[in-house]
Amino acid sequence: MSDADRTIASASTQPTENSVACFHDPGLVASLRSDGHHELGAGQDARGPAEEALVLIDPSFVRNRALTYISPANAHKDIGGVDASAEAIRKTARLAASCGSDRLVNSIVDARHGLTPWKDQPTVRNLGEELNAYGFTNSRT
Image (cartoon, rainbow, N blue to C red; front, top):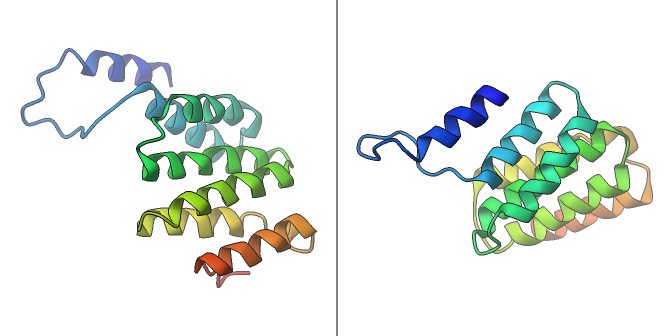
């Protein structure tokens, strides 16, 4: 992860012509760091960068901000914070309702699917109902 930080930091000094990088910023880096920790099963390590990303991502970039809420949803789920995970998914869905993005909808469905072990808890059940109301149907649960 430190190598990635150094590479991204040096990207600002690189020419932009023919670059394959669309954009980069500290919020995106923090979100990707959180996702990496989640994929490694390190939910506790994923939490800090997820929260940092939410502070750093400009709220005017609604889709990016919505995608960023998936990071704390996953981190909280990994450490058993079902209510906090459901709330982050809920925030993602509210933002997603204003911007069409298949990637975003898939992320919401995947995050909700991650809460399947707790499907009978009121928080998760209510989340499912809210997602259905938004049209984000999760056919896997």
